[in-house]
Length: 129
Ligand SMILES: [Zn+2]
Image (cartoon, rainbow, N blue to C red; front, side, top):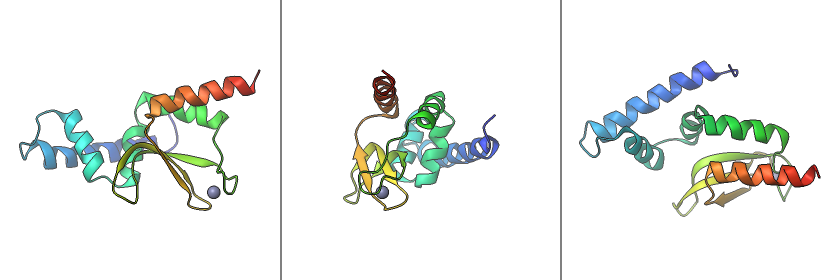
């Protein structure tokens, strides 16, 4: 178990409850995946988006990859953090974004977390040649 994963699971349950309340009970959809997607796009805070995705096996693989190779900021060389479902200042949603916690630089991307995983693994392989 990763540290904090119990809290993450609890958070995830809270998010699912919210998504049900807003999108299933109101009759917008009957599909929980769709309800969660709508919740993520329209209502979730950045923290909630991360907690939801962090419990998926995909994110565990990404976290493991990031532990080995983490992209750095072009501006200040600090480590970048991956955000999922990021909204840019114009209100457009992006599949992912890389954020620098030191200087605030955010690079939006339309690659999915899975595509990033592949990308990072390829880079990692090249560096080890
Ligand atoms: Zn930076």
